[in-house]
Length: 65
Image (tube, rainbow, N blue to C red; front, side, top):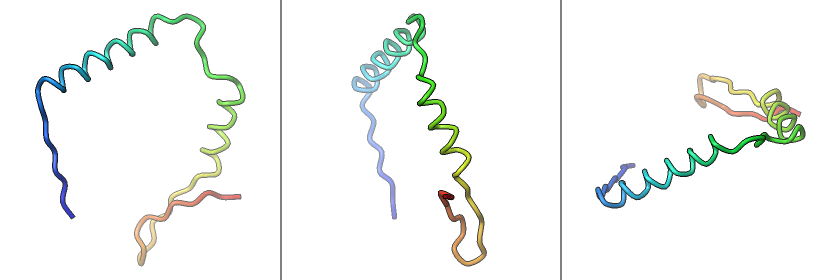
């Protein structure tokens, strides 16, 4: 298994500028909040999600019902 990264300075500059513009748009928007349903869904998922470390398989992720 190997990883390969390639960077081009001109592309990196463009992506950084786009990300900064999007962040500024989010910071300046007023009244933008997730819905109550979205928050409940995220919290319910967090309650049902568990990770255990086993000797034979390492880390095991589970969604509990």
